[in-house]
Each structure stands twice: as C-alpha cells, then as structure tokens.
Image (cartoon, rainbow, N blue to C red):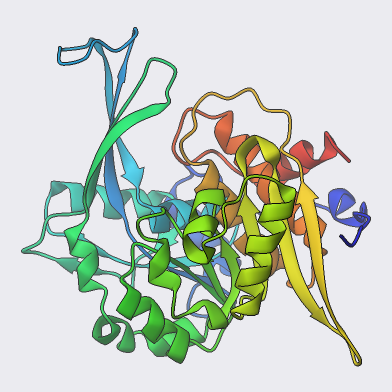
Length: 353
C-alpha cells in the first residue's frame, strides 16, 4: 500500500459559492452567472429520477398488519440524488433523465427547479408513469422492503442520448448510474469523450457496467457490487484490494469500494516511465450519529464528482476522505438528500484532520 499524506491546503481554502437548497430558483439563477449551464463548466448526470414514497412505523413493525407511522413523498432516484447533492455543493448540473406527464412528474420537475438542477435536456413522456420507489423501513429508519416501478428508464436509449451527445461532451465530466441499461451504458462508453464516473447502484444492476469498464474514469461500487463484478468475495482489506485490482485490470482508472464500517478502499493505477504501480488507500469512516441509512452512497458519489470537478488531480486518499465525509453527513440527516455544502464537508473533514 502506498501511504499518502493529506494536504491541509484544501481545508483552509475560502469556501466556494454554494446555493442554499431551498433558495428561490429565479432570483439566484439571475444573480449568479456561474450557474449558467449554457456558458460555463458544468456536470451532466444521466440516470433515474423517482418519486420516493417512504413508510416509517412509529414502533416495531407488526407483520401483515396496519402499522401507525409516517408516510412521506420526496424526490429520489440515484441520478436525481447525485444531481441534487452536486447542486447543493455549488456545481452547475444538468440531469439527463425521463419522467412522466403525471402529477409526480410535475412535482419532480418543480423540485428540480428549486434545487437548481437543469432539466433542459430531460424529457417528459406524457403516456408513461413517472418512476416511483416505494419503501418501508423499521422504526429506526432501516429499510425492510421496497418496490420500484422504474420502467420509464428504458426510454433512455442510445437514440435518446444521441440527440444530446454534443451537450454531454461539452461538460466537464459525466456521471452515470446502473439504472441505465447495459446497452445504453455501453453506447455511452463508446461515444462520451469527457471523463465518465459511475455508480453501480445494486448487485442486480452492477453488471450493466460490464462492457463500459475500460472507459470509466471512476467506478464506485460497494463491497457486494464489487464482488458481483469481479467474482471476488470482498470481506477484508486484502480481498478488497484484489477486487479493485481486477477492476483496474479491466481498464477502470480509479476504483472506490465502499465497505460500510470497514471504510472505503480507493485504488488507482499509476504509470511511470519505467513501471506501473497500483496505489491502494483505506479511508476509515468518520464518527457518525446515524439517523438513516438512506442516501449515503449517493452523497458519496456526488462528492467524488464534485472533487473531480473542483480538482481532477486531487490526492487519492483525500478523494476518499471527501466521499466518506459526504456519506457521514448524509447518514446524520433524516432526508434522502442531505443539506450538503462544501463548508459542511470541510467541518466534517476537520474532525479527523
């Protein structure tokens, strides 16, 4: 393992502008020229946008019975969550997605406007249902079961993206996620010319990345998804390194494997004039008072994208720490998308500086 020291410079830099997530969208977009998607550097996120419906009982779940509790609706979907986190971090972001011409679709479009997520390259499909994710937690907020109705994501085909490829390739980077089909991700790998960052989403969908790995600048699976992609059971640091090496061998430039309480393993292949070296760093989790397990992975992925947007040459360990800090902020928040800001990242990072 290559040991790296984390620079203190970033912690001490003045904060960049970050829009408050509930600020008025019209006034802020008019006042802040740096949020003009058409003129400046921006990030494209391609992925799903759901209406999340959460049921959380007040007491221990009684199976096969009506449980008193709270039911909430909120914007969700991996693509939307990553885009919203990026917007909270002050990044101009455009979400390329699809949504239905129903009440949920209208509500999601309105929420994106409030959260400064550009939808000018998304598409409303009037005769399709907006993607919906229904989940039930226990009384502590830990998910017990979920049902997803995400058939509309099948509309994000290569033909759909071909009409948007110039806009995508003018971005600083592009984030994709495994709610896109295998064919669509493969097509993106062949046609996107800017750095590609990817979230594997689930063990069921991780294989959607099989034919695009050689084009990935960053891939962020959890340990189960890394196992699914490589066939290597990730149980400790040694096996995580083996899985990361397998992904590096298949062409991924940087691998970030999240392992829960065991931390995050970050890996990168460094090629010098005369040799090739694999760099591995284990980044431990931050002390966290967990309020909910939802949203940590999406916040961590967004923080990696923010880091590349801010400084693509950032140290590997610092990249992992930024991702872990964002996940910790998300775990301490009851919302699926936390009120994540650069200043909050810095405060969290300072705890273990």
